[in-house]
Image 1 (cartoon, rainbow over the protein chains, first blue to last red):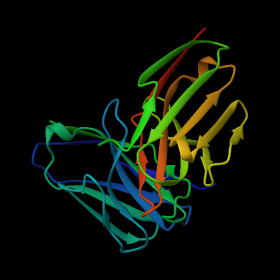
Image 2: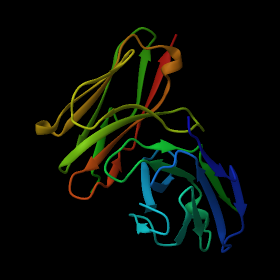
Image 3: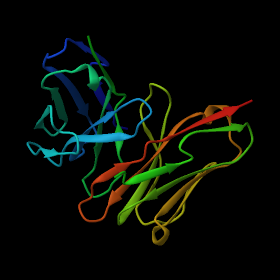
Image 4: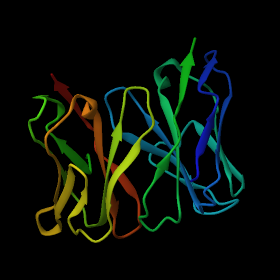
Length: 113
Length: 111
């Protein structure tokens, strides 16, 4: 079976710093997603990508950049970390964007000091 | 506003062996739904995926949906302590295949 690996598991940075999260999948899935999960809340979509080099904004894209340079990897950059965006960031993938089942990574927790 | 509403909101406490029913209601036309499970600090794991609104079964879990009622349910029979965790539903919108998540229901099963 496949797996989605997110690094780092914990990302600690200072306010205003640019920070990058990475995600790798070996499912050979076309579509990848970045979600943000705040405590006690559902998931909000930041960016998604339906194929290599494609980027689509989600509901929460302001303050973030993303990059899909390879089919297997999708990175997310927090352009200027703020204390009110400490949350867990979840990467997911699916075969395509047509409503297929999602597979998730274990998450990366952002801590801003 | 929120596209997907889950109930019970926040949390549900049961005694071991009781049955649980969790529900999602949604506010747009959808073409599929999926239920996920998450332990504290753990990854979201897909429980059941229903691309055609048919009833889905997996062990003690059953999902049923009524697209004309804008509602989906997850039934957990004979709950066990290890079922404790957060259950989230996700709905896929027909028009653009965007996925919307509910806020989740935390299930606590006590001995």
